[in-house]
Length: 144
Image (cartoon, rainbow, N blue to C red; front, side, top):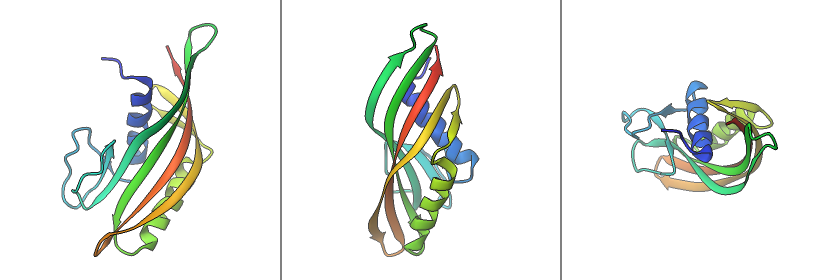
C-alpha cells in the first residue's frame, strides 16, 4: 500500500523525531509508561509524556511539469505534554527548533524543508505535566 503524500510527511516526521531522541514512535500507539510516545493525530491520556503530530492545513499539491515529482506544502502542529517544570516545554521547543527550523529533512521517500511558524504554551495539564504547541510549515518534494 502506498501512503498518501501528507501521510508520508507525518510518518516521516515522526520517525525523524524518534531517530533524534525526541520520543518513541510506535505506529500502533502503544507505549511503556516511562516512554515519551510520538503519535499522529491524537493526544492520548497515556503515556504521561506524549508528542502528537497533526496535519492542520494542507496548502497545495502540485505535480512537476514532467510528472516525475509531487510538490506539496502543509502545516503541521506538534503538540506535546511533558513531565516536570514549565521550562521543560520551553527546552523541548528549543530542541525542536534546532532540529527542524530551516532544515531539509529526509522523511523516508519525502524530502521536506521545515520552517517554524509559532509556539504556544498551553499551561499545566495536571500537577506535574505541562503542555505546549508548535506549528511548522513543511514544503516537500516526492518522486512519483
